Length: 98
Picture (cartoon, rainbow, N blue to C red):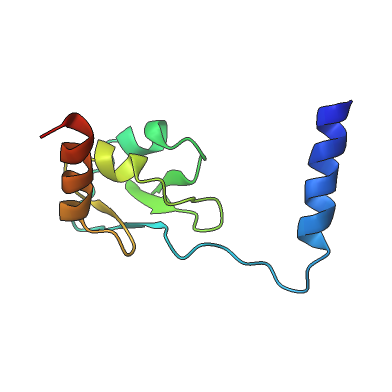
């Protein structure tokens, strides 16, 4: 009951605003590199990616820009806007102590 009330409160606060805002940091697919392997679809925790005509398509409203899809894509067909592949590599190296 408490969790439902909290969720309802968040929805009311969100919908009572005049405009909705969303972070511009979302995934973007490079269609020429996408092979339609679906690894990004399976990896996305927000269910923001689906295949359309054999290529990955990102729903920017659902995407939270976490980068899981970009890190999963073996063809480097997905980037997160405003975050380069080199920045992701550097972050992973820092976490791994390298």
